[in-house]
Image (tube, rainbow, N blue to C red; front, side, top):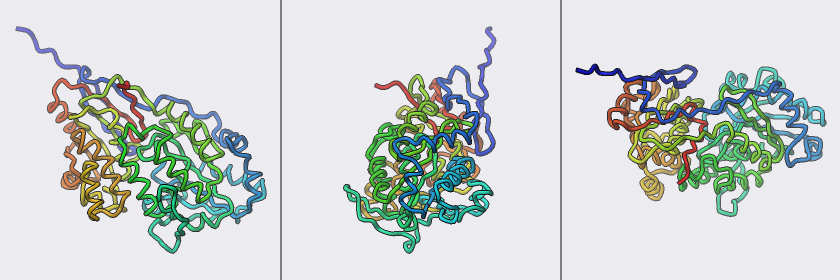
Length: 432
């Protein structure tokens, strides 16, 4: 009688907030482990920032910009993004001082989009103590009509509603970073204006536009209709200069791209794709992914599911690890109320007037492209309860290993693609 050969298993370590979870998967079931490419950080990040600002792409530079006036706003992305603004802003402020723009002329606005306000401690951690003491800093408030102005509509009819302090400034500069993004193709560039400092009507329509496309048509595609609409909004508002970082998987600055908000952004997107665009042999019946580094709530964490859309086969299972310590989507209660659904279902809810928050509607569709149209999603999360998961139309597991074991048992002999740091990843299966 032959002895049963014990199946070889691989311990897979996945990001889970600032910690990790470990699961065991039979080695023969693993098709690919996709993770951002190992890339060294810049030897001297400060010099990299200086070099980029002094050699802007498609732009005459800060000296020429200073001729527009003195009143300057710097738009900085928020706590949901890993941009090390504290390594960028001191150099930028010093460069502005050198062309005659004093700290008293400068205000930093945290470009929250429709995210919650940042606390003072979060702002200090983001920009650094020195910068927080040097210049005034405020949060954008997308719900405060008194702080918004209306600048007409784009050619396609999107209303341009924006923070009035941005409109009143002589100079507007955006700080951010560039990775693949489900709504705009890539983060960075014009996104610091839209949605960064816009009202809910503008953001709703650009995001709803993105819902009409699949993930394959938008994620990691720099030239797309949503990006172009956001850039038209940014031109109307007046975005004069960007400083966008490319980070490696450890959050270190690799490159800085500064200058014109389109030309510098496209160069940065090319560089970002080299790190975050990762080839996989094929799509798989099972995809295991995390939400890192977008772990705060499901509104952010869902970026991990967006990446899975490019790697999962129809009828498959996505195993999803996301801590979500702030819950589902506190700023967008429609997410919990309606749960993730197909595009057709959400389109009908919008048409009937049951959903009026179009940004929330788009979010429901982006996740629903996977969970309602392609695959079951099994969630493991400390911040979202079983009942909440069910309302979202997810399945739920009490432990990471339980989630994996259920997927493996449901789809025996199926291969597994593992997406690490999936919130920023661009899986690239063969075309066709």
